[in-house]
Amino acid sequence: MTSSTRKAQIAAYKERPTIAGVFAVICEATGQVWVGQSRHIDTQQNGIWFALRQGSSPYHPLQAAWTTHGADAFRFEILDRLPEDYSDLRRKDELTKRAALWRARLEAEGV
Picture: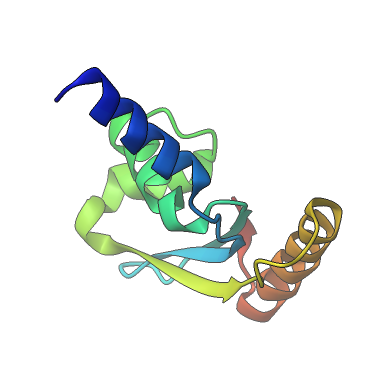
């Protein structure tokens, strides 16, 4: 890969629209649910799964369940997506509101 090709790919990656939303991590073995919010919902699962595989997740109950039941017992689900035209401040407030709503609906813990 040439330097100019790499720079073009990095620029294209940075210019792509971000999708904000609310997600759930569900343990099939126990039925436990963790709900979180992200400004980059499309890449959130990779980050969470990486931390869990390394044993370094800051969400101790989630890490304990992962260690006990293994990766195959978990699934990642996108619960809600925000429109792209929200301002940064509105996006943050709306994410917080929607995550709280989903936590209450699913009787879930926060991530």
